[in-house]
Structure formats: C-alpha cells, structure tokens
Length: 51
Image 1 (tube, helix red, strand yellow):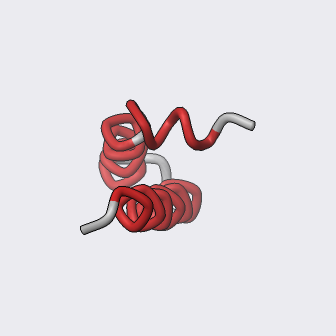
Image 2 (cartoon, rainbow, N blue to C red):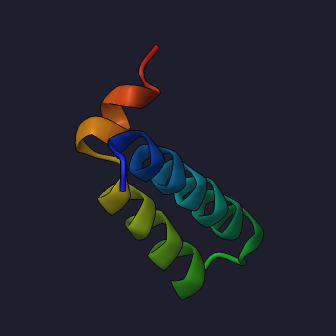
C-alpha cells in the first residue's frame, strides 16, 4: 500500500471515529472512539494534518 493511501485511509478512519465520539452519549463508546483517535493520530498522520 502506498504511504499516501495509508495516510488518507487513516484520516478517514479518524474522521469516522470523531463522528462516533460526537454522536455517542457520554460513556464507554465515546471514550473508546476518542482513545482510538488518539492512538491513530500520531507520526506521519499527525504531521500531515499540520498546515
């Protein structure tokens, strides 16, 4: 998989998880979604979001 595709797909996943966290009532689902975003948004993915 090319690096650009990986970053793009990871950002799409981060977006979906953010929407889940926003839509879920405060609880375990929202916390889990936010934790997953924190785990994914690092390295080259986080760097590519700066701009």
